[in-house]
Amino acid sequence: MILAMTGKGGVGKTTLAALTLSWLATHGESPVLAVDADSNANLNEAMGIAYCATVGGIRESARKEATALKGVSKQEFLDLRVQEALVEQKGYDLIVMGRPEGQGCYCFANNVLREVLDRLASNYRNIVIDSEAGLEHISRRTLLSVDYLLIVSDCTVRGIRTAGRISALADEVALPTKQRGLIVNRVPGGCLPEAIAEAVKATGLTLLASIPLDQDVAALDADGVPVSTIAPGSPARIAMNDLLAKLFTNQQEKN
Ligand SMILES: Nc1ncnc2c1ncn2[C@@H]1O[C@H](COP(=O)(O)OP(=O)(O)OP(=O)(O)O)[C@@H](O)[C@H]1O
Ligand SMILES: [Mg+2]
Image (cartoon, rainbow, N blue to C red; front, side):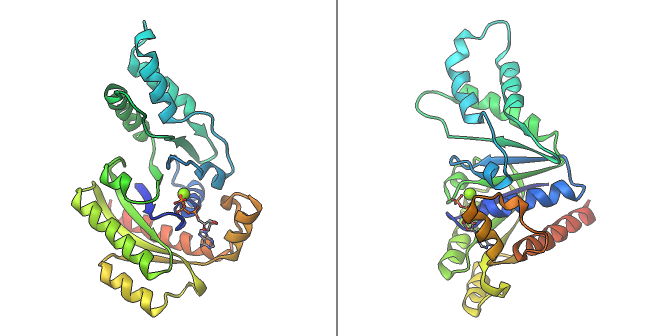
């Protein structure tokens, strides 16, 4: 299953993507590919790992070295570089997309890269995409075709309305997603206030989960400790685990 976290800035996409990755890696759902599609990449920090190369960097060098490449096809060159950029961990691998292209023509490099990434993706049972904040990646349709678009919002009426707009935009551009739903994050006490519940209803989105405002998440973040190491009993981890168990059971019943 390909899951993508989307939503406005700072709502918790990366945090929830990291909790998702740890759940998948420890619940028999491997192999898992984590795709950091935020140009300000930080999913690796949430998982406590480092990376050396990005797909954006590979694209840039492929464009520059295109004429210098002899004897080896561009496809093979990119395949090899993407393999090298993959950070292999226990239960999952991470690929960082990096910055989007600069000026100049990237069409050829992009087309070849898309094939390389599609081939890479086909090696994995599950893929988790942490996307960039806002609407641009949706309007540009840069996401892979996803099975589940998870629209994350904070616990404010304005945030929920933005989530509704993201969903409407996904419809407008006919984003290839099979299912989508809303996750309200940082909910005080874990129970949605009335005004928020009303705003959720108005979006027409399915509410998948309310993730509590969790002091453990805040404390780890304050100390620069990866959120993936959060205690099993922490409220955000428990709520996210419940959601994932539900999503993956439903998926198995469908197959
Ligand atoms: N359930 C939670 N309880 C407490 N704090 C949280 C929770 N979820 C996320 N946070 C905090 O909210 C902040 C933003 O989280 P995060 O970086 O995951 O958001 P994001 O949507 O990925 O942001 P960006 O749009 O910048 O990529 C972080 O400080 C994180 O620790
Ligand atoms: Mg993020």
